[in-house]
Amino acid sequence: MSLLRFFEGVVIALHAIWANKLRSFLTLIGIIIGVTTVIAVVSVINGMDNYVASKINSMGSNTFIIDKEGIITSDDDYFKKRKRKRITVDDMNAVKRYCELCQDVGGVMGGRPRRVKYGSKYLEDIHIAGSTHNYIEISDVDLDYGRMLNETDELHGSAVCVVGPDIVSNLIEDRQPLGRRLKIGKYFYTIIGVGKKRGSFLGINQDNWVVIPLRTYSKYIERRSSVSIYVKAVDLAYMQESQDQVRSILRARRKLSYNQEDDFDVMTAASVMNFYDNFVGTAWLVLIIISGISLLVGGIVIMNIMLVSVTERTHEIGIRKAIGAKRKDILWQFLVEAVTLAILGGGIGVVVGIGFAAVIGSISPLPADVELWSVLSGLGVASSVGLVFGIFPAMKAARLDPIDSLRYE
Image (cartoon, rainbow, N blue to C red; front, side):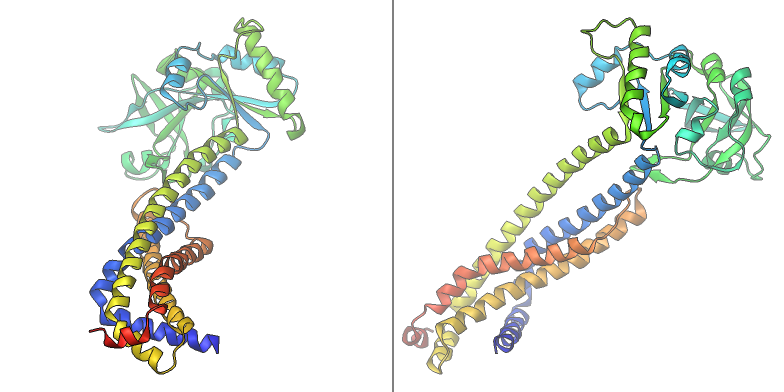
């Protein structure tokens, strides 16, 4: 019986909504905006979560990075860390020589973007990095074809390079890049390998790079750049001990006393993920505030429109009571109408939100991943708003005196 009453209330609500289409749509705008915001932003954040997690996990649970500046969280942090001494190739070699719990030690050095030229063509703002031969083993760089740098290239400071796929597609027309020579600065470098296409992330192109041997980079490109040291511990169980060994080696080389803090940062997959989680936590807070305000406004509008509806239908309420409708029947009718109105707005918001997420994912580097729970949450919150803000108008309608209602014009 209650289910039949519910569907009857829904039908009456839909008739009332259809009879006042423009007013109903304007009533739903707040709900639509709130739910759309939830679906679109949650979809983008979920997509980013999956992408970032995969990239960070590819770093390896037993790999950590020693960097001059590390993760910067504020302007003060930036200016403080910029004053630190650079990490040198000799520092990296000392870690490689003396760290007993380090299975593999490599490094990468990179500076400002530079011009890369092939024949008469050139590209600006290409990221040039100097790398040890084992960098590919402790990073997320994958080769499409050719070979990576080897120990001989590093030892002799060979003029060779591995390039990103954008370098090939934009500079070398016949797409046979191996053996071709690129000019960077005053010197030429022979292409020996091409990386796999990775696309872009957060607006950053991940395919316009060139990697050359670390010794070659420090000799011909930029002598004063700081080295980021990549360290792979012998085992995950010795992760902390290997970090402590590396810290001790670098502190001794940099002549830091016991009461001085490190003038370098140690970054692990966990610490990078923790920083990302803090960033996303702020985004979630902003999402909650924006959607909360929209839903609150939508709820208030629903309540006002329902009060207007009660006034307009006072005579109808009097007739229903005169033919036997009880107070709870009138209360139920207007509650169902408010909830139906809110769910309709939530449904439109879900469709628009999914559309926005799809558009964002297709035209921007931001990944978007629509989750079922976010859709159900949006509909649930919308119906809750309708229920909460529909109680007062429904109670007002239920309390109307049938005699006074029949006299109402």
